[in-house]
Length: 385
Image 1 (cartoon, rainbow, N blue to C red):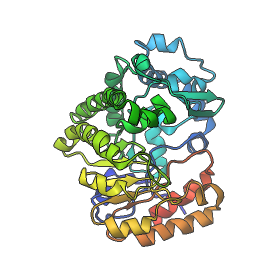
Image 2 (image 1 turned 180 degrees about the vertical axis):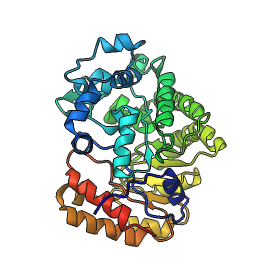
Image 3 (image 1 turned 120 degrees about the vertical axis):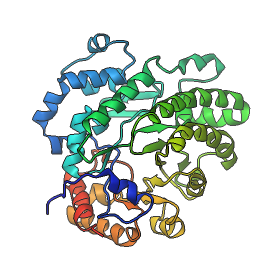
């Protein structure tokens, strides 16, 4: 079986209205190093890492004021282990130069690229190949607020990245759908989860102040995006855990919704479709974001969501992207088992449109590339309408 390499963002957009298209779309925000190497090859990756395009990309993601300043910090033998520049020791497809990411997307028939535009002060602990939240956070109280400062050139650099994607994607069929966070999960990373929970009750003004700093950045991003011909926009924020909202619903309604609506306003006014990534249990999130005009939800983790029940209840108002089990069949099954699970999803979710085949988060290094290949091949052959 061969992949039908016909990336077409119109397919993704139509499916998320929801309407039937020629076939079920396949989509991933990003894939990690194991699968990147599988498709692009080690030799090509080594060449990419030492390329001028790679150096320029690292400059765009860095806080450096010039490419020369950034280049001085790069160890060309281990670019992806430079935490200051990449924010991760793990190779992500999103951190490939746009032309190389487009090459990967076309090789797998994925319909859109997702430039990552989120900004967050460094809040993580790093060990080789591992990153984790700093449980104490970087802000304990008002005395630390100065640590939350947007780098001066950040918005300008991110728009250069988007323009780069728009240029290289011309004529490829691959769309451009940037992703940026609102202000919820960033603030509990900044404060640390326990401190964040206490501050909600002890110092709500501090919460609001930091949220306003974060959302100001995101509003500047969406205003600039609204001036460009992007195909869609992905709102990124994790509001929930496996049992529901992380905080009382009134905090979401009072603190998150008004700020996020301001962030999304420039995109709505331009008519740009808005989709959302939110991990964990989405039962209470979905009706809320439908009211906000959001058209699709991702990734619908199967351990805490019944996608078939959600589709039955909300399928005329909301599209569903994902649910292929990262913690199950994708990581631990055989390619044959992945293909069968993909067919099950398509059979039950694709009729009428409104379903996009994707993992329940992203293609991590836990997933054998052969299993990812089985999922997308099945979607792109069996998934015809």
